Image 1 (spheres, rainbow, N blue to C red):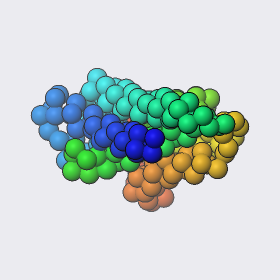
Image 2: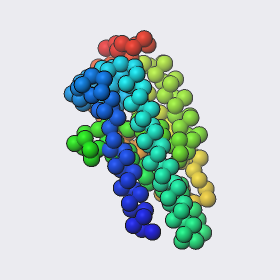
Image 3: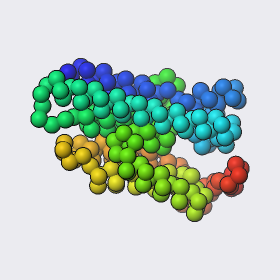
Image 4: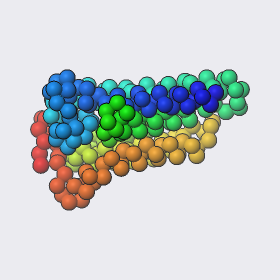
Length: 218
């Protein structure tokens, strides 16, 4: 059973390592998105450089891979629970653990030279499995923050923190909260940490804003 769990986590990392930003940018632009704009392999950079459709496809596919990895972890760890006859289900732990592995794969993709994205879209899919109410609140906060500030980076950081906080508040009380806190915080730190350059630019007043209509405004 330990081998099964380990293989599942590794599979989640490999799923996360599929960089849809690179794939769609090369399909539409014939260029590596990591050499364009901000250099980030994420939906926002793809949208700014390749257009709305490839950007949207990147976001959706990144979210789906997060969902797939977390759901796989939930299902397989629940199967392990039924095989061992344990009193408590480990399904939620599997979802969080495989979600964190997928996030790591997205940020440090094995298939793309360990140079990936920031994990925002991927986290949407992960927390849709782990704690749906937290991601609903997080997406609402993100949308409001973008409308008010026009900073995608700030909105992403605020939304990530919001999701982590509410995923802890609405934890699965049948299994125990500590592992969920650790894994949820781990994913939150990954997202916020990948925005450190954006945070510096926000503090310096040099971060780019988005202009509703498709063009960015410095």
